[in-house]
Length: 160
Image (tube, rainbow, N blue to C red):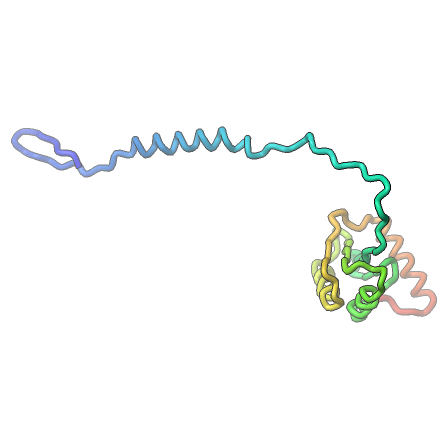
């Protein structure tokens, strides 16, 4: 507090002086503005090694594709929704199959269909489930759906 002296009267001034506080914040802001770009350094000088003569992979991953209509295909074979976990279990039990599943879906696929696939994979015992970043190309979705139409023409029903 500060005492202000006037004519025989003492007056207390009870204001906070924020100038030092503002100075500290401005100094911290400048420091952060200088340091922040340095934290984003990218190592452009890292090049992955070329591997020659490596042992080939003996186990394969299972590929589960989902079309925008919500149809499931395990390694290009159409699967009913109700049989999805059972078919994935059958694939997981094969000795040459790695316990890893790659889910590849169309950009317009409903989230529910992807969640059904992940639940079925968990029930089937897959230890790792990967959702492909590259979506199901439109040509591949059409190819799978056309293959399904051929199955329908032979008398089998479509997966649901």
